[in-house]
Amino acid sequence: MIEKNYWDQQVLNAMWQALEEGQLTINHEVDALFDSLESAFPVAGSKIDWNEVPGSVYLFSQGAKQADFEHFYHANAIRMGLSTPAFYLSDAALSFAIGGDVGSIGQHLPAILENPEHHYFAAQDFSWCMALTMEGDLNFGFRP
Image (cartoon, rainbow, N blue to C red; front, side, top):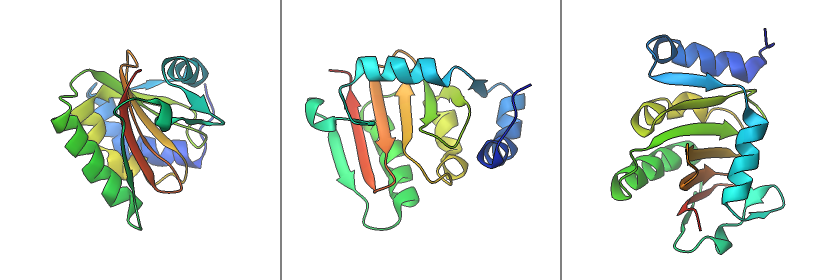
């Protein structure tokens, strides 16, 4: 059994029903998923280098990062027609990734975004990625 940290438990508590109903899944292969994400997108330091992702979308949140990202997530999901299975990766706080469809993950953004870290949402085939950094950067792009 994998030991859960504070953030793991908070997110699991908020999502227990969706997990139980199979709308969301847990994936413990976080390192392998990050390796695949880094293979699909250019990286500078510990973050995706969005300047090297042609046509990427960038916004900066001046304050309400969570609310701004929720709007950004849903607007891009609609505008870009994101319907592929996806997952959420945290860069440190969670010991697992969360899988599901774009809509199901989107319904749980408030619980996910409580964690103080960089947040990555990507298609399971890594064809697109959306991110929110602790600094307030909101990014979206398709794999170059």
